[in-house]
Image 1 (cartoon, rainbow over the protein chains, first blue to last red):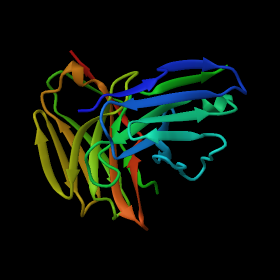
Image 2 (image 1 turned 120 degrees about the vertical axis):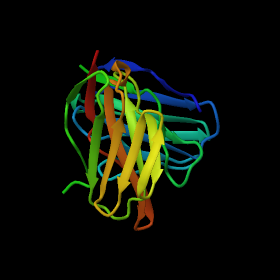
Image 3 (image 1 turned 90 degrees about the vertical axis):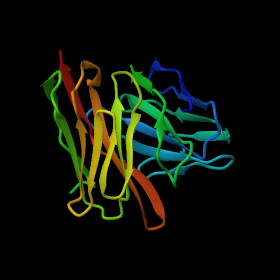
Length: 116
Length: 113
């Protein structure tokens, strides 16, 4: 199966700054996604990362706050901008390697973000 | 009513016990059903992937889907301390031209030696 690498694995950031998270896969994938996982909550889809075009955002998430890039089939970045304490969470990328539609999805180990 | 409801747990069992994890759902469009296992400080790992109603077995794990009752289960036989993790159910289906994977909140399982 594919190796999905996320960097950084964790970070502590100041309010008002931004953090960019990278997701690299070692094989070609059909789809890439970004999720947020908050304690006691379901995984929440932020957006679908589209190769070479703007990401598709879910309700409640906007490009200005969560800009996403996907320059090729195996790499994507998520930036969390203008950080506030409410952004403290785990951010996960997922990919579809071989499947139907948007599943099954395979996940990276996540980025644990804390805001001071 | 939430689209996917998962027993909240936590659940603690002795080693060797049979574990039953359950989720219910409300969206009839769901066709694909998954169970993920998530160890502490790790991402969710795909454990079982099934389509439509019926049972699927993989070693000590059995996934069961009952679409008529909108109910899915994961059974773990001869549970081991290494099974201690959070288990997430997830399901997907096409509706209104789009498809989204919807997760339960997860249940934390502890298997005591």
